[in-house]
Length: 472
Ligand code: ADP
Ligand code: MG
Image (tube, rainbow, N blue to C red; front, side):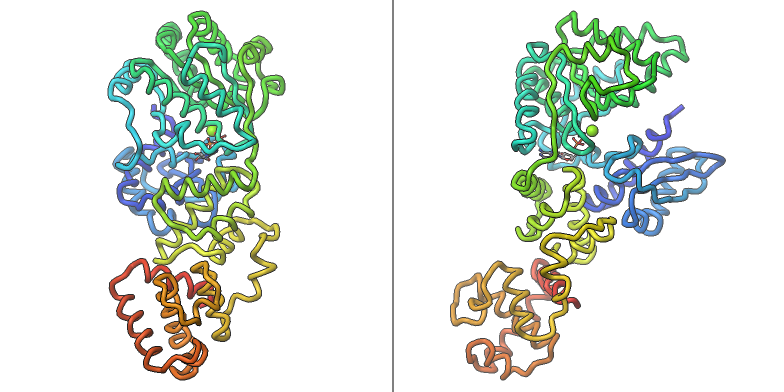
């Protein structure tokens, strides 16, 4: 029987090609099957955004895919489950790990897939999680250094490597990054990455089918075993027992073992003492929530990775206002990108502020409510100048000046256009505001923008974003 979350993963993978990447990465993130009873599949979604999209826009695509995967499904219901948000609930699907598009740095060598197919099942390593694109800062430097050391010299001094830290702080990224590094240095190595829940499922299946011998034999062939989130092994005595044997065999054969958990070994209650003490034999490192500069660097890196340009004040705003995890940081960014794509605009402080507010963040948003909340409606030409110049990172003096640099020319024309179009001011009045220019100059500017808006998508996005800032 297919496990429920595998069923959902398969369905989602079928839907994926029809959805734009950023939207896919946002709407389907952290979704899970809650129940499959009768013929109804009950899907949990983490927030209202996903609910809107899945239950309305994508519902019939998902249902078609579900029927194709399992003909017993005849309806799907969706329910918001806050506990799924940001991966706090182990069941949620990490779809960002499923995005394997053409731009990804490197696919796993086929050999690896073949070897895994022989028996040991493993979620494929996500090519996006490499040690190279892990942004290093004071709160994760040691963990990153240890990961690199293990990647270069598996089975060496840091065995096992135990990485701990809260949800969404980069443990899985580091663990998979080590896997890639090992494979890069030795493409014949058998690297197995397995989340603990899946490990439990495999063992339960093996015990049920009386295949535990085969199970052990399979894992004995592994050169590097990566087990993610071992806190889920708590109180699963039989699984722990099997794992203990596997651990010892691999360790004695000087094979690398890498483990992650949400807390240090000592605090893992529900785990057998002998297992905990094994975890303490090698190297223990932690990851903590990154400081502001590192958060900003991560956002910049993610923008590069997703090939999007976002004004730096927006990135700073996000970095200031996310206090939970890197996963959330990335989530807000992707949400902002996806939303802007839908609206054909560019993310702004205002649009991100609204996303954060809707994600139930009740805290005061830094740099938003105090400074901006009240000034959002552009009532006069000065407001428009202010908004346009902030958007383009210029001073409003530059915009009204006689300067003819290319960087100010277009913003100036946009400002004229918006003041004319949205505030209905006369060409003469606008001319005066812009340093005593002639009204024909203003007219020309407005016509130029109208013409450009017909063919320049980038400009359409910019103007839409500015209009949103103006409260339109
Ligand atoms: P955990 O396993 O600790 O819950 P993940 O490894 O899944 O966290 O990280 C959540 C997201 O944040 C991933 O998309 C990951 O790429 C990203 N991330 C976390 N830390 C960093 C970092 N230092 N640099 C780049 N991306 C990071
Ligand atoms: Mg993880």
